[in-house]
Length: 450
Image (cartoon, rainbow, N blue to C red):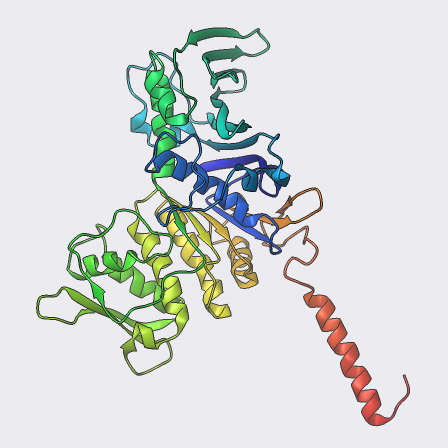
């Protein structure tokens, strides 16, 4: 699980530094920088796992990329090519794939409270984007810190150890022909058992980070079974239907239930469907259709012929139970096309998978109903997982000097202590204005002066 993200000169953010929780909610006005936070994580992932591993940064542009960010000038703050662009992510070293920590490492094995950070900074040099600096740093308690840094001139590597107030002892290794990109760094360095462990941890985090975009693929009348479900998630959620067919063909997804069981349960719990079924429509069982009876309906129909909300939430529900436990999900506007009650029930779905499947959810939303349900669950004593520590919310706001962010302070009673201005629009102002207008209309009807 990621514990924090820090941005420097990234799009509308001159600077950003926020903590992340098992469930992190990003609210705010349009063009306030919410999506940019998500895009920073997607940029790291597509740079790590893109087809061209030689790129020092992959801004995207192909259909299979997670984010299309254009170029350096469009990403850097204020389109200022003289600024450096940076992303930092943090996580708990010991809680991410502990088996990746090999027995031959020369440095101490970290404890249970260690804080791991990865920072990368890019700059624009001539006509190309270059990596100015890459750093891994890890705290062993309050006094000890190890850092692995590539220096800014891009031809040196430094191992820096700091212990309390003592001076730094440094080990410098000269690299010949070092090309400044993340992927080649670890192949070139000698004696990199420790670095290899760190690199594997970072890679594992982003390998199991999935993104679901705001517009999911529309439903189809028939789906083709290609005999193998995908092990990755497309942003549109298109390939999640293959996972449903996989479950239908009696291939178990979990040890306790099938994926289809979980999806059917939650579509009912979301008050979207009282019956959900995947059916083969040919003798060879190569083509399938999805049949639905709406929540308060009686007639079974193709998913194409029922409300659009089911097809838009379906990929999210499938993905949350199909993708591996301990994964990270970046989700934009999961509430789209859902009625208010279903939006509220989404909070219960997210709490369920965050607790029982150890998923981390980073969600951009505009839904008041979603937040209100989280507040309610925090206030209810029986919901021990629903705490202000496990559910963090932020409000983003655009400004002349760039975006700003405000933590939404929710206490243990579910009350918000610091409602941001116009958090969900000016509802109170609209109600007051409606009452004043209604009184004025009534006065005019009665011929009474103001």
